[in-house]
Length: 392
Image (tube, rainbow, N blue to C red; front, side):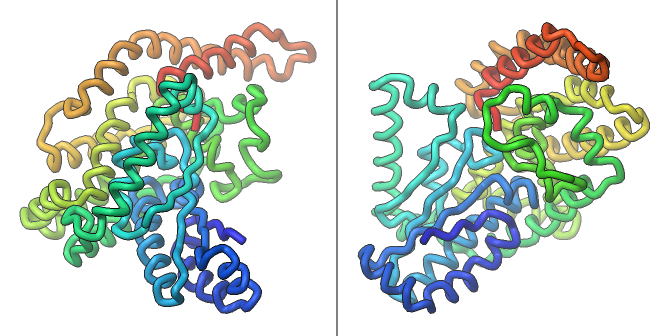
């Protein structure tokens, strides 16, 4: 029996749930039959939808530490099954760096991960590429298992943990303020192609559960997919700017210096900032404004987009204050070069997609709508996904 902890609430409750689970005699007998090892699955999608990028990753990190410690107390080896997706918002950071940033002692010679459909072709399209990816995975697991207990960059530093707790709380507050904004769900549906994604027929589940009225009813994968299509990409950065700004406002220069120390000395925090850096480079508020124009109530569209744009500008400034670079992605030249090559074509496709969305929605009431704009719209979705390298 493999429990899955994915939402923020479930990740926080995970130690108590596992404690109860290990108290059941039938479970302990089963664990003994499997060599005193208990597998636990960790989800990245719903935790991100619940609390945003920083909160999801910090809660996942804390849960692994707590569950591993609990397992040692019960003399049970805990093995983690990471349910990662292709995008950064769903745990899709570079394999080697993502594993290297896992809490010390939580890999311990065994790690299971999912590979989502959208990245299978890029990672396992041929024998050589597939072998290379498996070598990275195996080498990273081996290196973490051997080295992590003694690595300074993975050591628990109370001052860093306290700062991350504070940052998480403030980013959660900023994120909750956005999704609680009146009209936000309507904005999401109208300023993105989330409803039209179902026409692709590439998944087994709809974009939302029956009778969806708020964010809790929305499916996590289309949530990331849709925010990628309209280049808001807020699932990979929103709330972090407000959190850092509040932290520095309260603690002053000492707080800023502490964050810079964390960036240099904490592998976990550095990975977070690096992925936010790259996501901010791929996000585009000018393109996002085109999609915001699709919202039927223009006042709602402008109000919510202004809130998103303001947070984008703040996050950009705060990340630069920690990293020290004036331009995003300069520390990742290959990533920057590849995306710059595709950007002009993607800009044209986004402009076309906005027009197609309006056309498809306008003719939805038509008794016999033309299939041509629908097919063109679906092709534009595929093109944008290919350019970014993921769906959700």
